[in-house]
Length: 456
Image 1 (cartoon, rainbow, N blue to C red):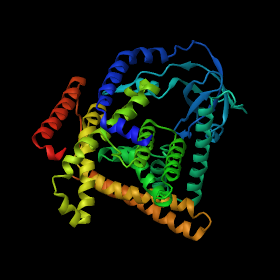
Image 2: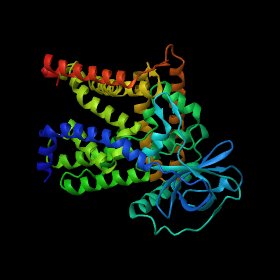
Image 3: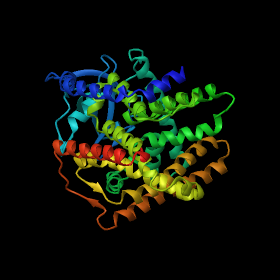
Image 4: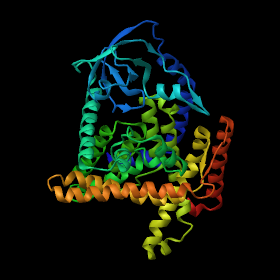
């Protein structure tokens, strides 16, 4: 079974062509789907019963939560007027609200379309409720689908882990970074910190993606990578990866990474080539069939372009230094490998970042040399902190080191922001210019492959 799938994924060139066809179809039918998903709400007060499905974000005047209605399973963005009552709303609480519901408001900055972003993430509307418009209510979850109930259960477990983080005494300066990097919760990240990570080209480290899941995959493999029971060990690893994906909320980047790792684990049983453009194309096809609007999601685009560029350009870059030289100098091999991955990912994502956000981080390579090793340490220490709950003394020591690493990361990245020309701002790319840039990148790859076939 695994050898057949391996042959299908790695030797069949039709998959990228099939992906192009699927993308073309989605581009055609996508606007129709988006229009149908944009609900026109009546101009009158509606009474809804809904479950809180996100960690509340407390702002200056409101408490922001995501809701899932129990009647028709619609996802809504809700803003509750901030007071002592709304500040106590928690993930999993049932709410009964009587207020006006509006479609997601149109807001655009550059090419970032907030309304399209919300629709792609399944939001059907938004509402504001002041004191007296809502109340807590015990609700039955039997009306929700099995998948929705499962996601909510895992999110409640994540909430418990976040409570453990707070009980461990992680400093406020480090808590937001630790929560975002290990459990995908960005509710405690302040705007200044997000802007700093974006300015130095390290935003990807705060958004759970393939990097984080591959680190977790490697750690789990060290414990259950049994050679005599390969099938059992790979099944345990894949189940663990998907459990983590549910734990952090099944974002598109996490789903893409979990799906690819699942194929990676399956192909390893047949001792075949594990990662290829075909594997990525197959993953994209499955995800687009499941949710065509993912194509319009900025996270989906960045995630796939990063992996595609790594698959295409990394082998070329790695061969610039002869293999025997890398094997003789282990640290050179590690450093050069990190450099190649960072450069390749930047080739794939820099045009999109400039298109959506209008800036380019010039010191991205230095930033990646800082965040990737520290992120690896941070994730491993977070796992160790959970595993040493039975030994409070050792756990306290691990937590101190964990907090120190997060603070050190923030400090080093803040230092990078002080470097000259840290970020080139006010870049304005049109959609045509973006397409031309990627066309040039593609042509460059083809020319290099033809001119230097040994680098392919």
